[in-house]
Image 1 (cartoon, rainbow, N blue to C red):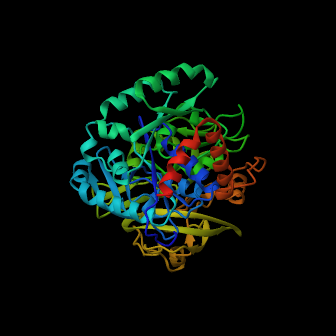
Image 2 (image 1 turned 180 degrees about the vertical axis):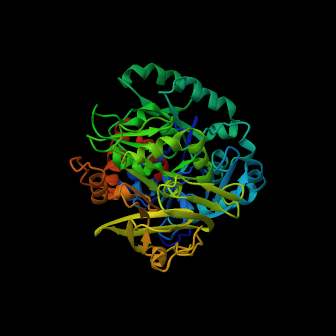
Image 3 (image 1 turned 120 degrees about the horizontal axis):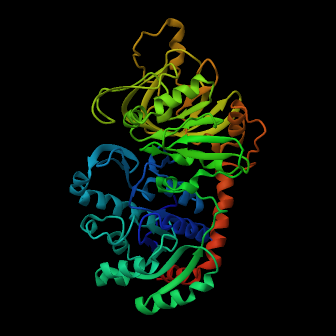
Length: 526
């Protein structure tokens, strides 16, 4: 972050006609374009609701989308970019993360009672960003015209009004009804908020955009506002998605070549950090499937149990849906299984929650495929980490409430460092169901992580971002018998930077960026 300025930077706000219409992508593109202009830009989302989160360099938690946008802006991610993060743990409850630190779980009603406090937290965070940047690109959430939520809204038009930010409204033509999306949104807003919307970006157009010229004319004539551009579909640009709506669609299967090796990821009800597996979808000769319905797994080269925001609840779902039998049968046949974070905990013997941090207090049996026990404890561990797997270095991050010990077996990796963090390293001892033998005490070494079954085919770790490291991905693929699968040469931020540049170029080709730049420059000159 730059030193504070006396003058606040201007803001541009990106709102949507609904969820998953492309707001995050527009913000990401603008952040990269402003960086290319030599401006210091920062993303900002007052309140995010997602189980896809990440860790800042100072060990605090924010939404993954704001980390992506900060990368596109060439900035280190900071909690002021996403001061309020809601992580759903059930149909009516969410863990509230405020300025990077987890608070208690709240119902929607409880959250509304906290609205004034949280709105002030968000406004103060925005003010700090505006004093350290040249421009702030704000993002809304869902639809900016949800009338039943308007009185409690702290992320859409009320925040843009506080910042005096012109608003770009994004609509998704692919889902149909784009005219109703745009005109219906305007019709729902009061005149003050309607005036804040300066124009539209129409996203996910397929085909010849010239065929939509008459549609642009119709929208501009009836709304009195500009269509800044019609943004074509772009399958060849890979930007990490914000939330799990993207894996609710069949095309996420990434089945590229029939007969190619397949990796399955269990689509848990409360799946988190599914972006861990984006690198696996990059290779041309590897298929990636998100699996929800219990099926035989013999066609897979490996199964991955991902992170979860409600580990015990998702473990119970695995038991009730028949997945437990399918997974154990796959393991008994010699199948390869990897658990990450919550998935690692589920592979163990039990998950204990004496304080009710993950629902009602109690204990949930695991799959029993790794000799580990887990207890959920506060505070949450949030840290950037570096590690070594059999001498191959890598980097990633940890976000978890659990403290896990091995009753026997070997660790998967050795931790080299845990970055600056305000939560302790996961070395607090646990008492397993059976007392540890003297020669087992080293299994609680805080410089080790994960567990490998004696067969070497079942393993787990708390490290997110494993596959961002090409050599680590190559080693894991080799461990499941896929030595021949090509791995992208570039990984992590190096790979993502190339995608941000491509996204910015694609955006500039189809959207009138000059008008947006004019807004910013005029405000800078005031």
